[in-house]
Length: 173
Image (cartoon, rainbow, N blue to C red; front, side, top):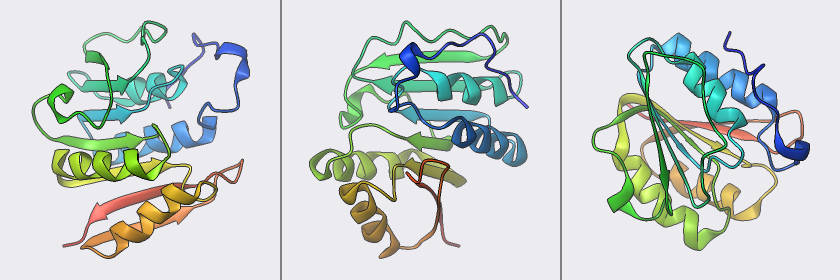
């Protein structure tokens, strides 16, 4: 499993994604052979390091956040890493190409997450996974999951240690 021993979360802020969620996402990267990963909402970068470390040699990680992302650095080599400052509702800032796994944990209000979803769903590779955090305790994120279920997606939501919820989405065949 990937290690984040070199990372010290700033003040242990409760907005950080639970460690177990990062471990599950890292496991998904390893098990599916994902080579390209996108994260919308980096915050302090704790999960980012888990995602980066799980990528295979030659893998690519892109993280988008409205804050300066200089806090995240990985000691892992042989991987391409891009940090993009801007809103994940701005399609122009997204890297080219499709992604095998996309993790979304950015703004949690409807006027942000619906336009963001409409971009993210175009960026997922065939057979790829889109994972959303905070799907059980924030009303607008739960509402988005209900919206997505109306379309041809398999949607599985599970509790997390802090009961915030993680949802994994895959386009139905």
